[in-house]
Amino acid sequence: MSEYILTLDQGTTSSRAIIFNKKGQIVQMAQQEFQQIYPKPAWVEHDPMEIFSSQASVAASAISKAGINGRNIAAIGITNQRETTIVWDRKTGEPLYNAIVWQDRRTAEYCNSLKEKYSGLIQQKTGLVLDAYFSASKIKWILDNVDGARERAKRGELCFGTVDSWLMAKFTNLRLHATDVSNASRTMLFNIHTQSWDDDLLALFDIPKSMLPEVKASSEIYSQTATTLFASKIPIAGVAGDQQAALFGQMCTEPGMLKTTYGTGCFMVMNTGESPAMSQNNLLTTIAWKIGNKTTYALEGSVFMGGATIQWLRDELGIISDASQSESLAQSVKDNGDVYMVPAMVGLGAPYWDQSARGCIVGLTRGSSRAHIVRAALESIAYQVGDIVAAKIADTGIHVNEMRVDGGAVANNFLMQYQADILNAKVIRPQVLETTALGAAYLAGLAVGYWDDLDSIKALWQAEREFNADMSEDIRLAYSKKWHQAVERAKGWSE
Image (cartoon, rainbow, N blue to C red):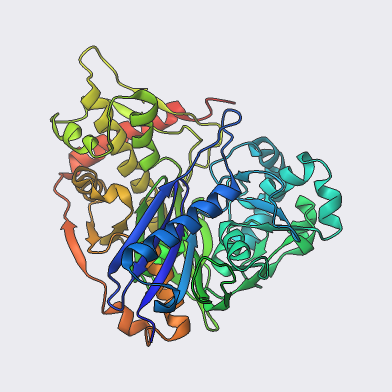
């Protein structure tokens, strides 16, 4: 019996490989950041070859550091930044253009032009809000703007894929062109009710069906690796978009359970069971995962600037030298000094969906310090998540008593305590924070019998710390009111 599961965790700013054992514990990991490309304001791209090379490099590094080889690995799970769009040559595997990242806004105007006529149709079929965030308009942009792309697509020479599809194509030497239901449900081309690519939407965006990957379950053997990277052929057996993988890794397997991942953005996902719950509050209805013949659905709200807000303080403003500094600086002042930041640098996500909102800092006085701005930045993350929780409660009628959390920013105790205070609910941080990678590992392990069943995996989940609300209702309401006033000032700025 092979002893380990390897997860390839391809994120927005870095590629990681994590090796897990039978207890769901991390044995070894490796991480490599890669270049963020900004050709124009609000355009965000990655080099697909760098995505692959960095992912291959960290996989080799983690295996080497663990002192094992491919024969010790029972299966590979893949989890990925979603919506990011890659188009490549079916025969050569050469990308036609850079990956257009989920954060990219170049197609916002085009999407806005469709809203009046097609918003209802798109939500009804896909569960999504009509927005440049998703893959459909990005594929169309590549076909319309790269020389000869549309003609080649019509001839069946091109493949589209989200990052999971791209990695599977590369790791199988182009033998596999596939994705799972969770990633497919984020393209704005996939009917979540029939679980198939939708001809009406393909016609709307003028995308040939031949470009699209085969859609599979999230936990099944897809193929085996065919590169020289591993000493033996390893089954690729679990695939899920990063947020759905994190929901599974947090073992939110019952309807009403929810988690928030605090990464580059913040993504809150609530399990809604075996039928899709359509939102009345601008949340997304999405497929969480499919195991066997059973599909689990979820409601999701996205904050575009989560941990990226702290990165911005570090890289662009230079007022902190390290993300971990933000915690002590925030705690060095007794409150936010009436300073509020709305980090709408790439527009506002749920529940506002305002593509023309832009970031702002309000309430500054001569007494406002760097610490107040840093604290306002951390608080803005908690407020944005709070807005999504309020929308979820309105949609489902389910009261939220607890929220499981993961992602890099949950190491910040100030942020977690403030989040509990703003939600007036318990915030639970698990022992294994790498729940995105863990979810993909669980899906892969289930497919190959590494774990017997869901119950044996549920027994592995453990809390590390709980944060309980400790703020009076009056103060909570006063802070929230000021936050919403600040949001109003950020809306519509670039119209």
